[in-house]
Amino acid sequence: MPAAGAALAVAAGGPGTAGVRAVLGLDVGGTKIAAGVVDRSGDVRSFVVEPTRAGGARGEDLERLFELGRRAVAEAGLALDGLAGVGIGCGGPLDATRGVVSPAHLPEWREVPLVALAEKAYKKPVELDNDATAAAAGEHRVGAGVGTSDMVYLTISTGVGGGVVVGGRLHRGATGNAGELGHITVDWRGRECRGCGRRGCLEAYASGTSIVERAREADLEVASATDVAAAAGRGDATARAVWDETVEALAAGVTSIVNAFEPEVVVLGGGVTRAGEHLFAPVFERVHAEAMTEAGRAVRIVPAALGERVGVVGAAAIVFEREAAAHA
Ligand SMILES: [Zn+2]
Image 1 (cartoon, helix red, strand yellow):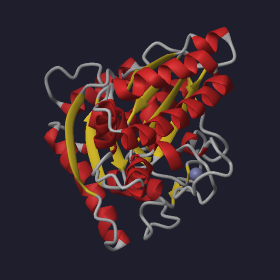
Image 2: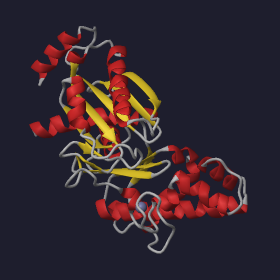
Image 3: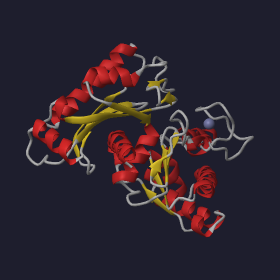
Image 4: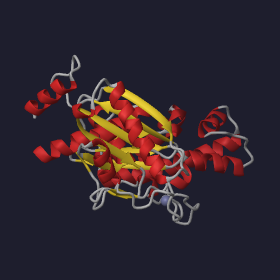
């Protein structure tokens, strides 16, 4: 819609904005909330972040989130009028069709009509998706998955989340909770999963939380998953055992995902991937050896490209993605 874009650029009034319709992205995470103004090409024109401060009154948390968004708009040199829309990525579970969230990481937020409240706060159309789905949209649109038709994104941090792009489109499921790839079973009699209560989920082995927990059970003094990877790299046998189990679980999960979706690329993001080649090399090797088809064995497994801004860029990407889908 070039005409509307031009009109909005005029409203924005800034130089270099011709033809650009900027979107406000809001990322509601477990430890931080972030906001940023992102343009169509993925350029981040402002980025602000604060601790989530879970445990505060729900109304207070919401007002802080909306105020953070207003700050991002101001820092981008725009007025709210200059925005094409607002995208929100929020931890699940949620109902994207009704615009209601009950994020597991914010116990005070139950059945919060986040879309309606944000529309009221900003007087703009608002789109909502699961945060990992939004991150997948960001990596697909302007990050490590650019140009692919079929892509899977996994974020491996305190938990494990995922998003799936099929035929160039995000796969959301009936209510927007699809892509919970952290809860693929890799050992059905295995460790209890903190995220969902079942046993043997990928998250129960590959998450940073689990890596540290299993290392401590083995009497290792470590503060993070990267400590375990580093100790394993130095030849510590106990750390090696924990890390090998982590890699095996992740490779088992990724192989199942590759067999299910036959993606061209699997993008791995999140803090645990800071282990770098200690993680990518062995996972790559196992997935390539074990995937069922030639296409599966040809899959690329690459690090995420968007870093700490993935949540905000992803939240904006869902607005652009839905707009493209509406015109398809
Ligand atoms: Zn689980």
